Length: 288
Image (cartoon, rainbow, N blue to C red; front, side):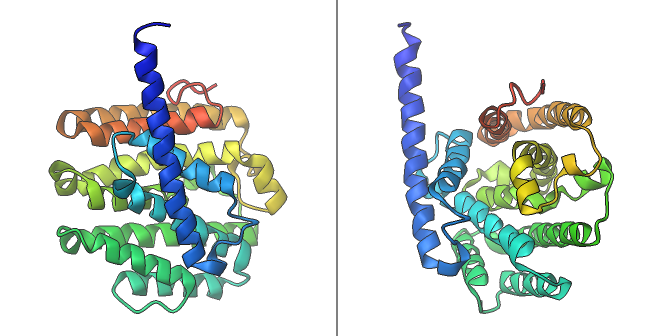
């Protein structure tokens, strides 16, 4: 065994322990909000996958500092289920959007999904910068909800968007909303002062993750009737080429961030790398 292996194993073990601690927090959240997280849709594997992703993206962090990004990501999944598997009419989707944005603006929540959002909003409110950054957080929330609503319409009306148009709607994925929540809560001074710039980078990473998620979940999406780029007349080779280009461009955009905020850049790079590895893609910059 080489000298470096024990240290590497220690770091891997610590990161897995961090993910497990984060997972316990998410399961407590699921219990708090009851019907929002039915066990059939939110099983142990889902919580483990979510917290492993955040732990390996920021292994230097504590569970306390990762709780907002984990909760934001879990909330996104809950909203996605409500839109894709509960809403029957466009008005139901629109009403959910209105209620979420109203709570983001400070309204009293009236459902499990808005109670969870209000608690997330209030936790972010413990950070002194949130008052000044709230508009950006709310704007990304609106983009995400609008993207989900647009995808719902595409599915229900059997619209077939082009690959470019599909990628333009990647805010529906929700990872940028989770990233912004994370940086508002735990980002360093430079990150909090440059969130608009970071959002642009995060949204580009999100485009890659949007396609990667479709490739990884194709069979499940087909069985559930969900929208998936591979079922919209776009071939796997074209999707793979697009992912390669997106990953390379993301790396180019992340590099200048490294000079100003090394951990912010590492978080984005590691997010790409973990998701690619977890889903069986050899390298996010050299997709095969």
